[in-house]
Amino acid sequence: MGFTNTNMLASLKKGIPAILAAFLCTFAWATTPVVEKVSAVPPLIPLKMSIGGRALITHSAAQPLGSAEYEFQWPGTYFEAVFDGTEVYFQIGKSHEILHVVLDHGTPLVLIKAEPGVYRLSSMQRGHHSVGVFVVTESQSDPHYFGGFGITKDEEALSPRKRTRQIEFIGDSHTVGYGNTSRTRECTQDDVWKTTDNSQSFGPLIAGHYAADYQINAISGRGIVRNYNGTPGDTLPVAYPYVLFDKKEEYSDPHWKPQIIVISLGTNDFSTPLNRGEKWKSRGELHSDYETTYVSFIQSLRAKNRDAFIILWATEMANGEIESEVQKVLEQLKAHGDSRIAFIPIDHLSFTGCHYHPSVADDDTIRDTLVRFIDSKPQIWRGK
Image (cartoon, rainbow, N blue to C red):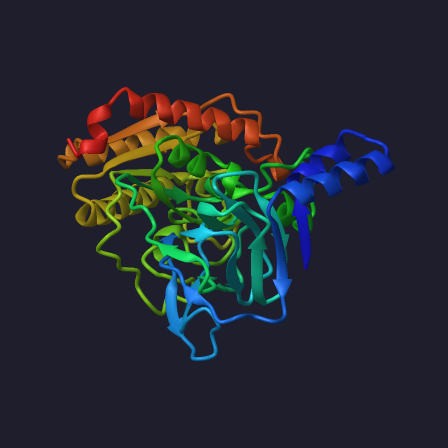
């Protein structure tokens, strides 16, 4: 388990002498909220919570913050609540992720592989506060758990504000934010884990620009019909319908009706040559399967989101093969009568993140490109 204050890290990275850095860090902790694990938990009143992403609700009488526990696995999941007071508690279940704890939209307090238990966020002035716990890393192997927020009887529970805008991002590692904060392309798997920060990827940045709720439904290494280098595992369209990657329960939420759906899929289908033993005997067969499956996937999204505007985007990777194939998918969908869809090529990225993935600077470029397009069509948000 680890706790990191981003102000502390910034001071140390600038090379401030150890004694001065220690003084500044002590001052920062004394004047900013503190998050800490507590062993003695007072009686708590559960707070109403808004959830960004997909979560399976389970129940346990042993939960100190109410009977509900939330099991989740898709990246970018977040939990938010509001209250009036000076401190708030939250519970973390099984987790080996990096979590950002954010008070009043301020600088995140970072929890690294936090131990299960109850945590207190304190040292704040009395008043109305918002609190959020954001998952910034990816977890393909196992789901994780969150037990909600709670306050003592001396505090006042408030209802979270409902955002009117919703936007969904579907994709692969480029949407996850895979190794986007890395300073080098050469990374171990542990390096990838440490330098993946979904909060700095283009999806949450776009959602923040529009004050929108969002979902990040993406899995690194997965494609439309073919995963990276032909590796096994569910492709994204196969995994997409479910709450968790075990595919036991389909996701359904009548309140999730995104006005915009942003999709980027194809990098893993085409970035490597076909291997012996794969089911496609030629690149042409792969193209045909990709186009047919992608069209069908988008049509299934359209059936559930009739008014959503769908944005497809791709890079010039694989010598333009990805962009060419996505353009063909767009043309087929338009030929079938779908007019609320567009394709945006995004070229000239630096790919200086881990394993030649987009960097945070690239994420900014993707954000700016997509925001310019959305702003050029304000009717998108009105379902027109």
